[in-house]
Amino acid sequence: MLKISLLKYSQNNCYYSVLFNAENKEDIDYMLTLVKNIKQLVQVESGRPKLRAQGKEMAQMEIVKDAYLIIEDEKIKAFGKMEEFGKSQFSNLNFQLTVDATGRLVFPSFCDSHTHLVYANSRELEFVDKIRGLSYEEIAKRGGGILNSAKATAAASEDELYELAQQRLDEAMRLGTGAIEIKSGYGLSTESELKLLRVIRRLKENSPMTIKSNFLGAHGIPMEYRGHQEDYVDLVINEMIPRVAAEGLADFIDVFCDKGFFTVEDTARILEAGIKYGMRPKIHANEMAVSGGVQVGVKYNAISVDHLEQMGDAEIECLKGTDTMPTILPGCAFFLNLPLSPARQMIEAGLPVAMASDYNPGTSPSNNMQLVLSMACIRYRLTPEEAFNATTLNTAYAMGVSNEVGTIAVGKRANFYITKPISSLEYMPYSFGENKVESVFLNGKRI
Ligand code: NIG
Ligand code: FE
Image (cartoon, rainbow, N blue to C red; front, top):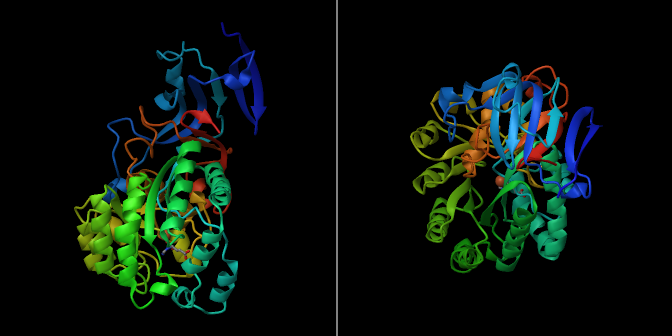
């Protein structure tokens, strides 16, 4: 028989009351949690949940003011207005955890659908080279950039890489991210790529985050393949992809399809090979040039095409009516001073738009999705509602998990964060560079 006691305590000025097993309080598995007195419960879906929001839908966001939220095990069970809670069927439930969120807002966790989170070294010396006038492409040509990261990554052990990645994942989680896609791509040899993907598998096994892995063997052209890069493409196709598939290490397949990197033809060959092994394309396109990346991504039914700093009317046209999520990476454009993707034009053309961090040591060394949210509004002129849809539901779609996460809907995973006391939802993008997240719940558990 369990001995149950009631404990009240406060943490970060939030008050919690917990029923716990008095003999071993670490053992408790919260079955039912109530979050009450929520100033605004944001991005709820009271009807049938959408898989993505496009065009005008991006401006729509349901909010419940003065709300409650009930979690059963790892799922959202119910939500509604506080004034209706007392007479609802839920008021008699025996909650193991009750959180009073007075003055605070609750949001679905961010989904970060594009990261390169597993790497060995930071690259701040190249950052200084860029300030002094070198371009990203010039640094890459002389063996810096991705090749610099690949060298350090080759020298690091799987355990070292895991430790570093785990810390970064933890930071992202504290900043409100609940689902994340992670790419390989700093290996560039079969063994190193497998090492990176095994690190991602360990993260999947040990983290409460929803994680998807993306095999990016074609991220850079190793020095020894310069001048005959088709041989490296052959290596990716004939050796890497079958080995990655044999260990079941990748959900998606990626290629850096761009000027100075992999061509449209290289990309088509690699995507075809990946598709044969059940990896859906999700690619880098149109960062450096209008490279045909968007078109080749759409042709192979990519779940997303990402970057899109260089977009013409043909690219926008080509995305219409497809299942491919155009994904913008504001951190990269900010860090490299690149032109901004025409986000407004895309939304006005009826397209969906997602925005992710591109967290990596070379072009976007920040895993802060709150900052991405601010940049969405400040630099790309998205309204706060559009920016929330771009960083939650649409990024969830871009990693194939929008049926499980991305909004507050009954039956979805209870992945959400409670803010510090703030005045309104607009305060989230407005107050840029500050952490507004006070506590995080993933799979129904407070982290
Ligand atoms: O998404 N563009 C290609 N890959 C990364 C950058 C990688 C690096 O510079 O290390 C990106 O920006
Ligand atoms: Fe990237």
